[in-house]
Length: 149
Image (tube, rainbow, N blue to C red; front, side, top):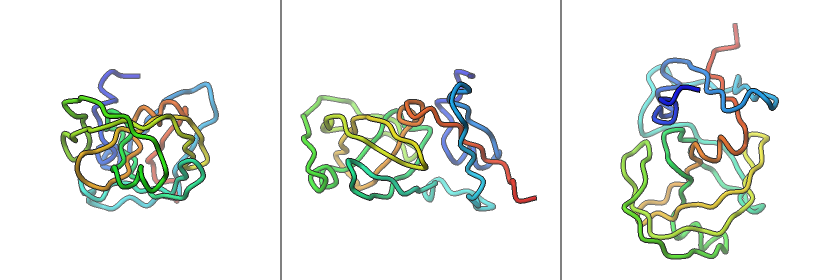
């Protein structure tokens, strides 16, 4: 895999109809049912249904995010323990996000895949973001080709 892949965001993959292969060892997941917009927006992104410790949520897939994010209110809603961390922040599709804490590890399922990860807790905002680390841990292959033809 090219070392440039982690800096590409989901919008770049959609715009260029690219393939992100996180692992060729495991079965692939083709996102053929998705219909990307003709002009991708940096703010819309790709949202998917997921569960975190069995609780249904909606998350943004962001291959340009350095980790998974959630707000403090989401962590509280899910009953998660948050430990305080000193951090300069982390990168996301929308820019640098201030990080105020980190959750303990939780079980996450999305698009038929499962993995265990911790979430960085944002100091601002209320987005739930699944970042590249979890996509790699889940051994996903994302395909953005139009398979309807």
